[in-house]
Image 1 (cartoon, rainbow, N blue to C red):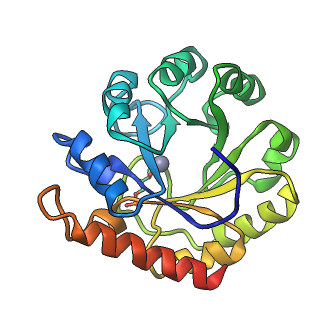
Image 2: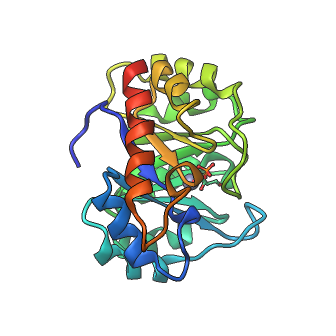
Length: 229
Ligand code: DX5
Ligand code: ZN
């Protein structure tokens, strides 16, 4: 993984066909996805359950590029090794998931993955100030985590701009997760985000047997974001 601030579109397979993850991952990459975003939920940190490391390992061979694993689980630390072994390139943990996020981020890098730090809409951006030199990515949640298809929370655009200033010239990606569409992508791209997660906005209108809409949706989000960057 090389670092740059070009817009990267990361479709979330939370909006894919759960019976066809392999084919869905191949399809979104063929249709222009830069990263594949994988949402792991435990029914405890968030009120929804998806899947764990075994599913990540099973889909890994179907992804050529970056597998971006977003852990919405608590506790986190005891599972990091399993997700690294499953082939995650980026592992993001939530700042709100436990009392020792500093240790969690050390453990992610120690396991050989890029370290991501996710923050909920209610978490102030200043909370990441002493963690900036130990992360590769900060994920600003623009919905409350747990479900796809929610409405973008506009107050977070200012948070992205403040985070971009705090990061300075550090090689840290700003990822946006939740409610990203052709309408909201330009707002966060202009504020300094470079990785845009999109679930429903990418998968809408398509299926494994009709993947062209995925490509059109990815291209439209990318074009809107790039024009604003
Ligand atoms: C929410 C997840 C998101 C979600 C995004 O908890 O982390 O990745 O799938 O879905 P959309 O793009 O539909 O808001
Ligand atoms: Zn996510």
